[in-house]
Length: 102
Image (cartoon, rainbow, N blue to C red; front, side, top):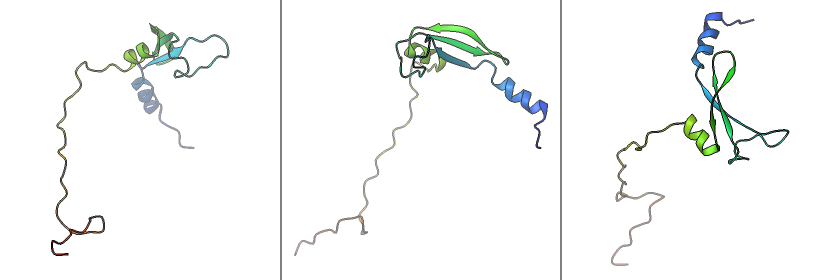
């Protein structure tokens, strides 16, 4: 069997420390998908390397997403690509140019 060295496994485990997740607060066998109850409250949990521990609280899906995926207030500006005009030419995808005498 190809066993992974313990040091490699520990590096992968340690790389995940601090990761956050949102868990839906649903009692019983109700729907558990986050998209099914967007207005339901969520608990934000943090991975400590061994178990998920409570880290925070969100009132709904939108607030949980803001906590899990923060973004800059100002979107990055990128140069807008210029449209490339069609060049004159012939090809199967081009319409033939009508001649003036015909």
